[in-house]
Image (cartoon, rainbow, N blue to C red; front, side):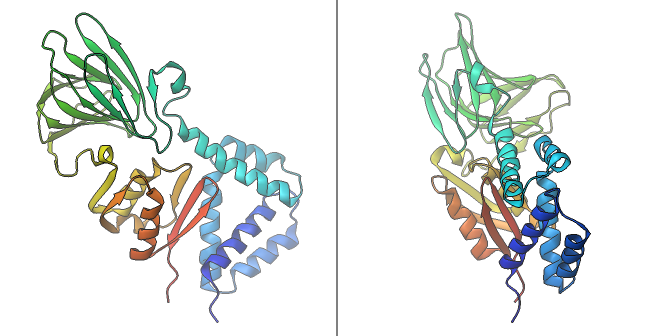
Length: 312
């Protein structure tokens, strides 16, 4: 009878917890080496467990734990859980202490619509922070982090300006999306015209159906076409993917779930995914992936581990 991959993964993680507890001796290390040499499946489970432990060890608390740990195994397991929680909390704030200075914020998985004093409306996506400063001559907003969709009320005397990471988007009456989650800020225009000013280049005008990305100190990338049918689908409570790599899909999904999603196999990142998914049930996407893709999904506190499915 072939060993069950999930059971082997649990055993491998159990071994690593003991080996990193600070009390393991040479005998226990030899026992782990003998265990992982039993079969290719044992070795694969050991490598995946080591990849998981390596991801956790990047946190300062994990490093300190490995240096000081001299506690019984049960406390070591609790420390591992604390490391996972530290990873999750470190990504939970859009910026350090963003909620203390932003006018509007959203938690993980939360989406919020805001009515502004001029009649404009803003939809904040998960994990976002926004400040608003309206004056007599302009309507200034700052997207500290995250993503927001702006539906701007017309007022030619007061341009509507959204600042994000060293650049700004100017509009009078239009509808556009600003996403500052990644290394670059992305601007999508679904109605009207906006002007994007960034520190790295000349101003660029964007019309409906166009997209542009810019960095803080780099010239903006060339204007790209925008698929209006799927643009800002999150505002409608949907995630829409059309032949998107699995790695990108998981990066997008991660923002709506607490904690982290860890994909242990680099080749799987390129598997293509298509579908329409409900944001009110992001866990259903994981179930669908497990059913349609060659993956196994393991849910841990503050962590989702995605591994290659065992071969039949």
